[in-house]
Image (cartoon, each protein chain N blue to C red):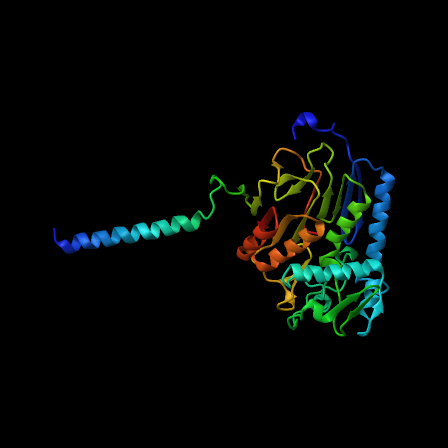
Length: 69
Length: 281
């Protein structure tokens, strides 16, 4: 096998790994399961971010809402 | 605090009414319905004095002043000072001097009157000067530069919620069209359960507010939230922002600022100021 094919294959693999990593990182800017991060909850319509000082419950019915007026 | 230390759940007194062009709700533990009714009367009275849609209101009289110092009530003085505070806190983005920009965009009468504003296709406006260059406030008096007008719609609800919560006692929620302040431990001792970004959060001596561009909208790119950097309705990649802050006033300011900043900058901004937020693109 000629040496240039090995070099070309190595270059292609390196390029693929670089591009693949970049695509993955760009698509996973925040991990909901990451430790030491504020809780992150992805909703279908938006992005919710609550610090640990804010208690939340998905089960409790709210008394009233904040909303656009 | 463990559940064994929590007070027994109580059913809060509740009153719902329309004012400020929206639906308002008051909740209180320990105050009777009469106290809530007096609170509603207070909001309605201030709405009458501070609306820009009524030519006979105190705000309209101030807006028609000709550049000289004029006497203003203590409430209007406080709100004008609040407008200057909001301008400073938002880095100039929350700007109460947007009245003429709103009128030029077609927002000439209230949505609560039934008719929608008329879209205007030839809106040509300039960026607004800093609010401090057009508005001055002193004890008992204020001065407005000719050619400019004040609209308090962007800051009044949060401010009024904070003030009314002070009047309604140590355990209450004042929600004025979605801009609210929750005071005290709530009906079950764990804070007041508030709907926020699709979940329920518990607020205790904290405010929350939401700003959005889709509700008071009357045409493509025509809505009530003016960007003072352009003098036109804002173009943002966010349609709605909800935030939690130390007061209803601050929450309203932070929500509007974040919406005007757009998503990427909004997250950096809110991380510095708010313990929670919800962004909707």
